[in-house]
Image (cartoon, rainbow, N blue to C red; front, top):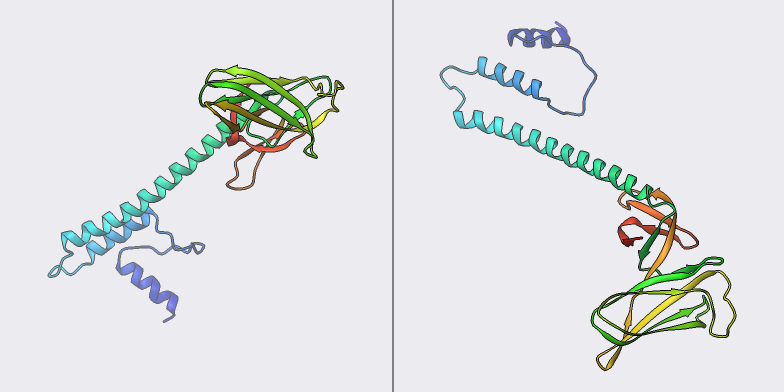
Length: 224
């Protein structure tokens, strides 16, 4: 008798019909599990029936695996939904301004470079220094005494020598006199979003800023 016929006889003795299907990766579905469980109960030794604890343990094990798979799928669906929502929100930012901690700000033609400083306490004097890419000071803005909280600044491109600076990228530094100490502060720079792109796996959405390059969406401090 061939091996195939022997296998068929075994399945027939168990009350099952064997159906040839493409080989799977060892996954046991819910229907398969129930069929095997019923077959096991039908063919158990009546003098040594399966203990209730063993039976419940098998059900609990299957339920646990199934529950984990369903939970993982739920998290995957939630993650996809959040990513889609985030993409729609980020897409609406194209052409708008955002505030973020950047190395440089962009002075556009006929426009201004602006931003914001967050003072942890009131200050008797706040100043903003604009430098070109070589580190040379182009302009110093003196904002005077300021209360604690956000302080806006704007540079129209006029340099300390009286000429207008060329459009382009400039570094912005800020400091404030708080108490009797001068404290360096990290300014938030305003930038225009030119486009939105999807980063590599795990990187999330990226905002492409005019003249400044990419910025992770998560790094946006404020939307203007």
